[in-house]
Each structure stands twice: as structure tokens, then as C-alpha cells.
Image (tube, rainbow, N blue to C red; front, side, top):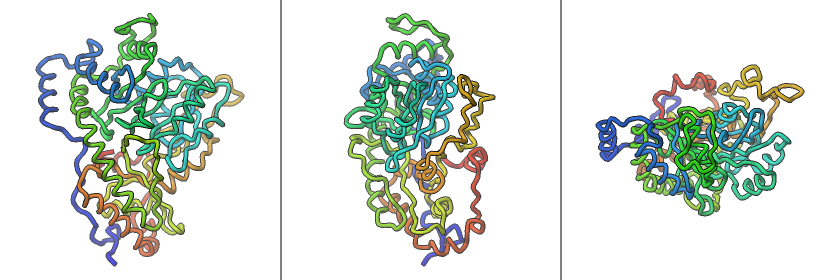
Length: 437
């Protein structure tokens, strides 16, 4: 039996996976056109390419209006502000997501309230969200995570019955559809990120889509320093900021939009093959199918590590799998309220204390499914590993099987011998500059 690469043996794979991001000659031509035009920024707003990308992106997802912004976090902040979320309002968010989802709520002056996730999708559990509702709750902020959608039927019903705003975090769901409806089109607004690891990227950037004109007009004013929107039917005046995207970013996004369908189909085909290959490996559980997803968007391929015993932790399994040449992560996300990237205290965010007998303390939260995913179970593979050929996918399964077959050797070595250290999220970036996520 071959020795694990983590312990000095030869890896299953030594060649790299396809690069990400990817550029084409058409991207170079568009960037040069912007450069030579001298019209580089986000003003006049919306600039020519930014307006075209926003319109086409919204239409792809079945929404009437689109507004490009500086990044995905700003997309969430602007959407919350446009929806009328006020200081001290509570917004329910999933406990298992990128910290920026909750940070955006704080930035908008509101209070993120964490609810647990569904064990089969890792998305917001509608019943957990229902239990989290109080008299202060004003919005739901579900996240379509990795390769699954939140249960939008139940969440829309909950929002309507409780008179709540519903904003979809679609940072992982570019081009995806749920029962034939595009990501971001089912709630009041949908927010997307174009950060470097995303399915569409301009390095940074974001978008908000909606079919409600009053929200669209407010979004435009908020993004464009408070200036009146182009249509100005509702004649609302607000203090705004410069949240605009540049024409260079819009030029890149045009090419990304044109290739999105082709690359998404390739990821979906390879993901289906990988699921078949992994299903026979002991201790690995693939996420159950979600029939409601009618067009897949796979930002990350996620499976669950459920070994027959606890001799080899999830983090040690991930370290061994990565040593075999498969880019992967276990603590890709944490339970946000436990993350060192979310040190939210009332001293810094007074909305956590106003009107309460004592300040909200996030150490009091406990979402067991999210914690199991974050610290024991979830294994994330970045989307670019699904952009290769069939043998690239087969290498992932071969490497996983090799680690499982050598579990006794790995357990005997122990985490300390294997050189594994549980780094904090704040410490990890300096060791992960070589990664694409």
C-alpha cells in the first residue's frame, strides 16, 4: 500500500489544476479599448460597459434591474440600506457562511442574528430562521452556499407571512436556477460578488439585482454619491457613497459573462462524475441531490467527512488529501459567531446594546449543525478543480481513497507528527498566498 504523501510518500498528483481566473484575447481587446478611451472610472454612472453588464446579468437571472458595485460586501450593505433596514433592526443570517455576510449587516447598522443550517445543503434552515424571529426582526438573508440553494419556497413563505424583507446572498450562485428561477430573483433583492475566486470575477466587484423599481432607484443613489437615479420615479433623496465599479472591471466581467454558461456546464458534468466516484469510499458522504436546482452553480464542491471512528480528524484528513495534490480546505468557513474574523462587540457596534437589557453577546449562540460542518465534517474543493478533464476528477477520488485506506498509518502518526496546526482564520492568509481562494 503506497505511503501517504503527508508522511513522505509519493503524491497521487503533482501537476496543477486549471488556473483561475482565466482570460481570453477578447478580454485583452476590451481592456485596451477602455485604456485608450480615457474613460476608466465609474462616472458617469452607470458607465457604458457597466450599464450593459448590469442589464445582461440581471436578465440572465430573471430580474428587471441590475446595479454593479465595488464588491460583494458593499452589494449586501447597499441592498440592506435600500430595503430600509434601520439602526438596531435584526437580520437573520445563516451561522455557516463567509463572515462578510454578517459584517455587512453590522455595517448597515443592523444586528445579525444567527440561525442554524440544513445538514444536507449547509444553507439556512427555514425552521431555525422561524425560531430566531423576534419583534425586532426585519429581514432574512439566506446564502446559497457552495453548490446548493437555500429552500426558497419555505423562506419566501416565511418572509411573506412575517412581513420581512428577503435578500439573497448569491456570492456562490452566478447563473444558478432554483425551480427555473434565477438566483437573486426570488427575494426582494439578490447580491453577488465578483471577487477573485468567484464563478465570475473581475478581481473585485459585486452586483445587486431586483425587479422592484423603488429599490433599484435607491440602489443607484446609494452607489452614486446620493445623486438621483436615472428614472427617479419615486424621487427619494438619500445620503450616498461612492460604491461604483470601474470600466476596467466591467470590461473583464463582460467576458466572464459570455463564458459563464460554458464553464458552468463543465463544472456540473465533472461534479456529477466526482459524486459517483466518491460515493463508494468509506467515511465520505456526498451532499444529497437537490431536485429543486434546475441549473447548477458550483462555487465549491463540498462533501462530508464522516469516518467510522474519531482517530483521524477532518483537519488531518484534509491535510493528507491536499498533500496528495488535491487543493482542499476543511475550515473554509466557521460558525461565524465563533470566528476570530468576527470579533463583534457592543463597544464597536452600539446597535448590539441599544434597547436591550444587556448587550448581545455572540458567545451565547450555539448552532450545532453549523459547528459540525465547520469543525468536524465539511470538506471544500475549489471550483477550478472541476474545469479539467476526466482524469483530473479521477485523481481527486483516487487521492481520497488513498487517504482513507491509509487511515491507520495516519492515525498512528498523529496530527503533531504530521505537522498539522489548527491556525486561526486571521493567521492563515500569510500561509495561503499560493491558493486561489
